Amino acid sequence: MKREKTAFISIAAALLISACNTNGQNTAHNHHTPQPEASPTAAAPARRIPAHFKTPPDLRTLPPTLAPEQFTGETRAAYQVAKEIPVTLAQLPCFCYCDAIGHKSLHSCYEDDHSVGCGICKVSALLASKLKKEGLSDEQVRERLIAHYQ
Image (cartoon, rainbow, N blue to C red):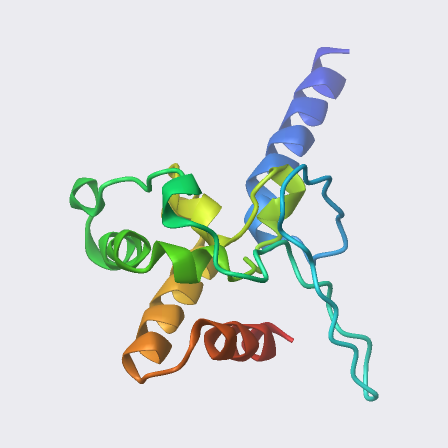
């Protein structure tokens, strides 16, 4: 019995940890404005597009992100992006499919320490920053991010 309980706890912990690696088949119940979009292709079924804001939310309605200064390296750089372009990140889906745990967009990943352990969140924010610096609009950044993960 004790061995079965330990096995169950191990499996449950593994499922929680894998939240950043899910294949996107989970669905989430959102109470806010984000609206998932789908982009089917003829070659193969497209992955579900996670929750995000289709239009720019008012900056005053977005919760603050954590201070980049409390992190180092790539994590610090990603949290800096969240601080610099929060409205852009709010318009981007997060392809670790954390909308299944209530996140509303990529911005949500930076409101707490979720992104610290999630490479998808960090890569997405850093890519968004690079594309914005190249002069792309938020909508174009979103299209590129979706194409990157499709």
